[in-house]
Amino acid sequence: MKLEADFQYRDFFAKPGLGKSVLRYARDQVIFSQGDAADSVFFLLDGRIKVVVLSAQGKEAATGLVESGQFFGDGCLIGDETRCATTIAMRDCVVASVSKCLMIETLRTEPDFAELFIRHLLLRNRGMEEDLIDQLFNSSEKRLARLLLRLSKFDNDGSAQPIAPHISQETLAEMIGTTRSRVSFFMNKFRKLGLISYDRNIEVHPRLSTMLQDNSQAGG
Image (cartoon, rainbow, N blue to C red; front, side):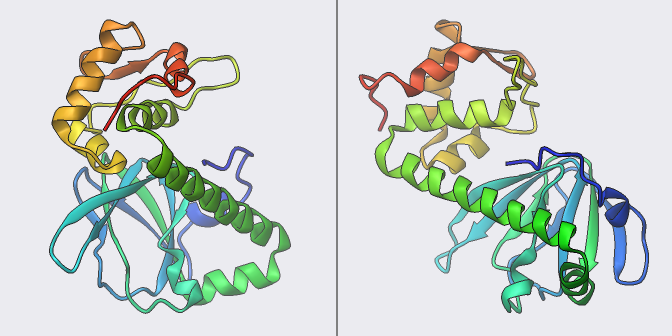
């Protein structure tokens, strides 16, 4: 769901100014917490961020990832007064913060920027719909395969980036709605089948996509 085109407004985010700032976060540092005041929009210039939600009963779940080149924390634009989730740096991150007022003004006065932001929202909405369908109809084994393929970001030529060790099996389990032991079982199965390999990084091979086409797999 990363915005693929060269982002012509990257300089807009990267240069501090009135209503803007560039912030750096170390791995495991919280960018904002659920319940904090929502008065700005964020743009991830570099890094990866985990989105975590805490239920009223105190149960915590990872609900998504923010990749470099994506907006997050934009609920304030529709009237949210507090953050509905917690965002945590999964590795060292560079984040641009834009005040709600400046963001609204830029959306009003810069049509290209508004178009880019709308595209971001549409891509995120499509991803959420795909995640819901995945959760409703696919086994946990297929959900893991799909998540690994997404995280590896296959290019048009079939090449992929390794999945860094900061994405743990616990995080993978939270994101697909299963247990760490099930993720470990499936990861070992994928490795034995030659679909992935891992030592520190996880290397995903294109053939893993065959798992999504095989209706005979059982997950749970």
